[in-house]
Image 1: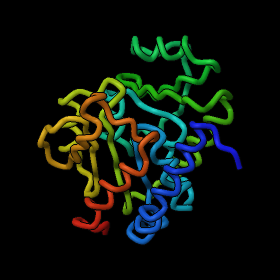
Image 2: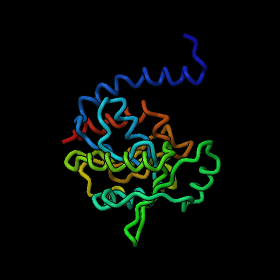
Image 3: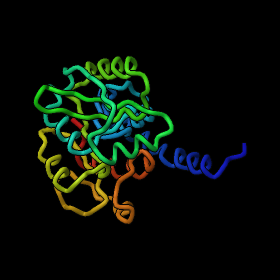
Image 4: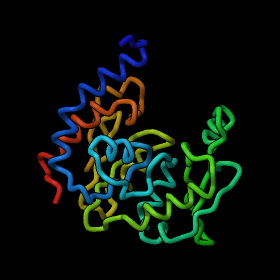
Length: 218
């Protein structure tokens, strides 16, 4: 088989992370709900071979909205998902204009506050709403792993707020050494200044395992 450079990198990365996947499969219950700010939850479920028990698949949040979502997740997941034309974030508007396919921008609103969600891999409102609702209903509140990654307008304040959220099992991957509770500093990411989790799965899994082995999931 002949590989392009891009395909060769993906092939090597997948082989390298296989040992980590095997260990994660033993540590994480198969009825776990993995909540993430980006596509990481979907990729983890695919690797481990479990059902999507979380709605955070194929999408991402800008950080103020992710913290808002986590702070009252039981309320936000029962609010009707709607869609809008433009992101409230300048970076979101720029990304949308630069995208080859015009993905959906979702919004959850309680009439006072709202949570914006960038449905990066969804282009049909009916499909996006149906999958979001179905996966919200699957959330296992007794077995949740909540993960954050430093990117998408994430500030140190957001990370501090994340560390105060009332979840027993939470991890935040950072590109800077903030020394905040529940954070995992990834020095390999410091030069680029953010944690691009989906593109560096082997490294993410390596750090995650070290954390979970010290603090086993209950």
